[in-house]
Each structure stands twice: as C-alpha cells, then as structure tokens.
Length: 329
Image (cartoon, rainbow, N blue to C red; front, side, top):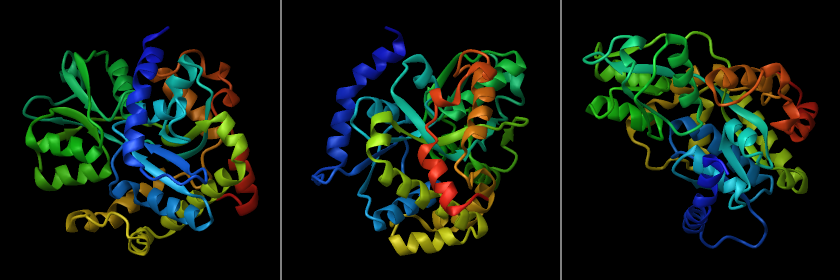
C-alpha cells in the first residue's frame, strides 16, 4: 500500500468527525454533501451563490468547509461527502479511486512571490522552504513545475490553506516565499510596495479547482448533478459579463455576512480579474487534455499526456447534457 492510500485510510475517521460536527441535524432527504477544502472568502462568493441557486431548484446542497483539498478528496473517497472541490489527479491515478471530475470551476491564476529581503529570483529558492495551499493543489504543482524549469530543489514545502492566509503570513514575516492569487497580489502591492517580488511564471493552462464525485453518486443522482452544473454555468456567465453581479448575489443570499469593508471593496476588482479564469462551458475534454500536459510536467500525473484517457479522470455526462440545453459560450 502506498503512502497516499495509507493517508486516506488514516484520515477517514477524522473526516467523518469533521463532517458530523460541521453539519448537524442533517435531514433524511439525502442532501448533496459538498466538501470544500478551504474557507469561505471573497473568491468563493460566486460558487456559494450558485449553490444557493441550486437549492432554489430543489437540491438540498450542504457545504462543509474542511482544512484542505486533500481532506476534501478523502471525504469523497471515504463516502463522507458526495462532491469535492479541487483537482485530485494524483489521487485518481495513484489510488485508482472510483471518483471522476465532472466540471471545471477555474483555471490557474497565481503569482509566485518572495520577500526581497531574502530572495530576488527563482535560483535563490534553491534549498529554501516555500508555502503552498495544500498537498496536490494547483499551487503546489506550479511551484514544483517552476523548480524543475529553473533547476532548483526546495528544502521543504509547508501547506497553508487560503491565499489570504499566505498573504498575511508574508506581510507578518512568517513566510518568505509562497504563491498568492490576484487579491493577494493587490494587497501586497498596496500595503508593502517594493518589499515583495513576483517571479516570472510563463504560460500555464490547467485546472485550479474542479468538482468531482464518486461514480456511483454521479449515476444515481444525475438530475441533481445537472441542476448543480447548470446553476454554476449560468452564474459564471452572469459574473463574467458583469463582475458587479457578485455584489448583488451576495446581498440577495446574505453571503459572507461578517465580511470586512475591505473584503467587500475587493469583490468587484477580484471578479473583474477572475473573469478570465472562469470556464464558461465547464472545461470538458479540452480542459482535461490541458491538465494532462500540465500535471505530467509538474509531477502530479505519471506517463505521457497523449496516453492518458479522459474517461479515466472525467465523467462528461452531466456537463454535456447541460451545455446542450443552455448552449456554449
């Protein structure tokens, strides 16, 4: 048994406990249990709004926030959650888990960043520690890919979920090299101009976050899954056309009620930038092929990209039905 498989088995009881605590009083009407390996922030507002729209269509969606994407994937594999958020390619290949990705939520848009008091360029990170979102995440894949491209090796990798958490750690001096999203980039440039350097990345086309589920769940709950996919695609298209729509959706559904004024002010700028990484057709086969290219180079997948089969990683049934109904963009 490999280490990943052992980690999954060891975490099952912990995941079950987390979900039981996070979602008490679950109704007996078979809710759709979604495991999200992050905290609710501005960048997840459009997803939270889409889930509310699915609820309006009769799907009892229950979101549980877990410590990391890795634990969210373990929750789905162990049956403690129905749907997970992440990009579990390594899990799919190495453990051969009976789960499949069924739609892409976002493509990668991240910024490797260093504290210039210690580092200036990629080669300075040779033998140094970095921080990424979680094990198997797109942030880890990017940093591993750039290490390979620049001929360096990190001394260690710390897992710090939440781009805003890593941004704060940079400002506090607790982290010296990490990777942040566009909101974090703006915060660093505003609060500490000149203190941080954003390292060159080049072109990266791959999944950052996707939805995945057990294959039995997808077939047994096809109607609910299609409602969810349609709610997400219509929300994505609305937000891409007008980023201010997220503000109205937040107000309508009373999302992130404890958001600070700074967080609220960041909603429109964030989604103006994020529009380019929101797939309006849910990804599909083309996205899977891009992922094969990226994740084999970064090391998350093994083998030649051309030899990998889309059906071994994706189930396009719901996505194809929804796009045939609402059209493509």
